[in-house]
Length: 503
Ligand SMILES: Cc1cc2nc3c(=O)[nH]c(=O)nc-3n(C[C@H](O)[C@H](O)[C@H](O)COP(=O)(O)OP(=O)(O)OC[C@H]3O[C@@H](n4cnc5c(N)ncnc54)[C@H](O)[C@@H]3O)c2cc1C
Image 1 (cartoon, rainbow, N blue to C red):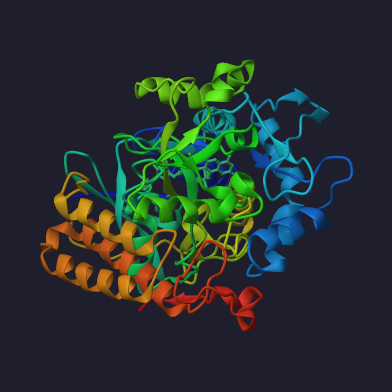
Image 2 (image 1 turned 135 degrees about the vertical axis):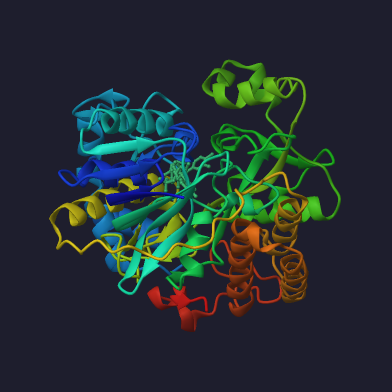
């Protein structure tokens, strides 16, 4: 096996990993970016990035909206610290070459559900995420202190007596490299691919979180998964997301041809995301075909405002001006993750985490729209600065784990895992379903050969998520228990998140 030495190893090249890499100068960074810059959730983000920079807005107002969306279960200190840093994050993105829509000194600010005032910045219209990814990637490529490797995927951590000492990485062909690093940063994104229906890109299968969990890192909020109510129901993976702005413009959800939201919530189709996702789930579970009737929009000039939705429909043979668009709810964002402080330190010496793989306490039980790109850039930048300025550890040679077979997403066991999680851990959960899912996963685990460690780690992560959901005897934010439909007010506050060690 090849053996390399690195100062800082950053695993993942979305908004979070690139922000770390750029701020860590002058220290030397080895950045793993398997499949390059387009294989990230960052590049798929269509909405935008939130910042309280408009007239009449304030950190206090943005913080209050975030806490409300979090269903009284976020860390107020974390919210204030991240939201206060939003202006600096926007400046950093501009310095990196990003042009926000509107004038430089007065960017257009958009309103989104859950925000009480317009504060969402867009770049290149509904391609904000791709524009952020492009700008940060281009600047990173020009940075002499960063070496980018597109051919390596981390499969495990190297550990020594003083904590984490790097990562084991493999190439697509199976050859392995032990990367001994002074500091290791996980920036591997979310977990949506653990579910059969998701808007998340293929790499977002929870591997970084699963590895950290296996090595005993503290984690928090694993049960909190946000579901998007309207992904295009089709055979592609990930599923294309149909923006909620379509319902804002008058599109209506129908099941077997009949509108159903008005009977469920007085806000009808404009009810909050988790309410609509649960309603879609219930209709689907009753065997009805759910669709989004946007024919009125696409027959009129308003259709021009939704080029992304139109392109996704056309690519799947649907004319949305004539036919309602088939939709499903889908796993979209993980509020839980590796527990970190404001600069990305985990509970394990030598290991850092940033972005969606991490849990700062900002989102609580539910994420406010457009706060995740903000968190990725703010906390990624803070971690990079802490690495550049903080005390240096001595580099140690970590013990090498056995080299596993590369993760193979075409295996039937992986498909089975995704189906089990989707049916038990979707928008509506019950104890009986969760208990049964644990048994099914135990059986699945017993069939895996030792070389299938990447899959076994994902199974263990799924089990930890289910145990966390079983232990939460309440409905809070995106976690809905049909057998405990109320919020347990005794758990309000940051403690509601319950930081835990999973073993
Ligand atoms: C369709 C969609 C729309 C969204 N819209 C918005 C929005 O409008 N506003 C908003 O704020 N948020 C939005 N989000 C959420 C937001 O995009 C993500 O939370 C954010 O981009 C996460 O950034 P990240 O850097 O943590 O992860 P990512 O951008 O996903 O990057 C993860 C990186 O890790 C790499 N990686 C993963 N596993 C490994 C491994 N084992 N070894 C090496 N590398 C690995 C990947 O290849 C990738 O480079 C959206 C998400 C989706 C899916």
